[in-house]
Every structure is written in structure tokens, then in C-alpha cells.
Length: 115
Ligand SMILES: [Zn+2]
Image (cartoon, rainbow, N blue to C red; front, side, top):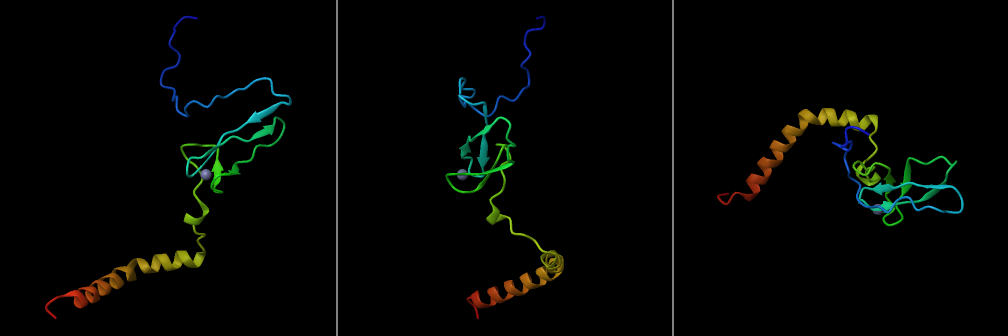
């Protein structure tokens, strides 16, 4: 083995996990999932089973994914956008400024001490 230091630049993230317990009875694989709160869950699957992309976090119920750096967003923060919502959004882009200005005016008027 010539050049020695092969572990350069590899991200040693993920922390200590005590992986790889051996000698389990049936061949199973353990997969880590992280939810948006970074709870780690490590369910084990039969080695021939399909591993799901998402897993429900047993602690908070959020969906958990296998990418720790990029856990699935909590469904509540991700409202389903309909076509109508998109249309409204686009329209309010222009109207929004006017509405805001008007609201500010009203706010200023109701607050101004000299009135
Ligand atoms: Zn969780």
C-alpha cells in the first residue's frame, strides 16, 4: 500500500452511532432516519426488504428521511399549493404593494399623535 493517507477530504460527519452490531439472528439491515427535529431512528429491516424512503419519527411523528443534512420538511409547514394559490400569489405580487401601502397609511393615521 503505497501512498498512505487515503482519507482526505471525506466528510466524517454523522457522528458516533455504534453501527454494525454483529451476530444478529436474522440478516437484517439497520437504516438511520432523521426527522426535521433531528431525532434519529434506526429501524431494522429484513435484508431483502425494500427500505422505505420515509419513516415516521416515533418521537414526534414527523416524517424522517435517510439524509441527515436534509430531512423531510414537516408537512404542516408545507401547504399544498393549488393552481389557484399560484394565481393568487402572482396577482398579489402587484396588488400586495398597494395593499401594504394602504395598510401602512391607515396604521400611521390611527397612530399619529397629532391627529
Ligand atoms: Zn422526530
